[in-house]
Length: 245
Image 1 (cartoon, rainbow, N blue to C red):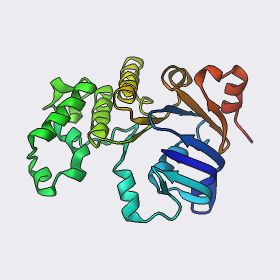
Image 2 (tube, rainbow, N blue to C red):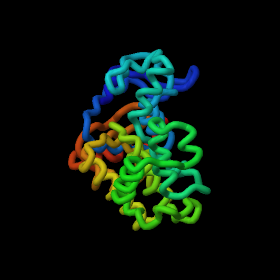
Image 3 (cartoon, rainbow, N blue to C red):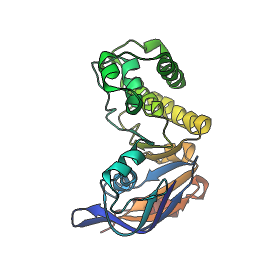
């Protein structure tokens, strides 16, 4: 799915991540942890392009990301769903419309504007709303939902694109404990039911240890840990979270 060898990433002239060596396989549930500013979001969002490759080799879904053409990058992005901390829903639209917006690459613009959906599209949307337990809110506007409910809609929308990879950027940081657990339970179900590779940027160490099959720890722009949660000793955790000068 994702291969990084001696990779150096950053923006303009600034190098954020250095000497990254990672391989991510299909069906993994990966948690990226580390202090603020360590480079977690840079690593995760590099998967959809937009992050400069200074050096090294970087492949996503078999495609070389260094100097990739826009048309090919668009094809890669169609196979990747993204869940944001701020949900990124269209608040004035219903839950159904937001979920189906995840299928827009397959729906003609005219039908999308008129909100004329075919039976197969409605069937898919219902399936994904069922997965996130939001079917009873189908017609409700998204600005009338709680934060946890909105994030669940965002997951259903990501699923509607039938992605091979889902990137979750701080998906629970704005949620209360109960809502956060619900969202993480759903992400785990999506991972296990559909075999979607999930890469989640997480601030909560306990959550990462509970849900992720593999954890990547970043500090000072470098990967300082890559392994199973059971391998996280107190010494390794300190190494991940100690601020580097």
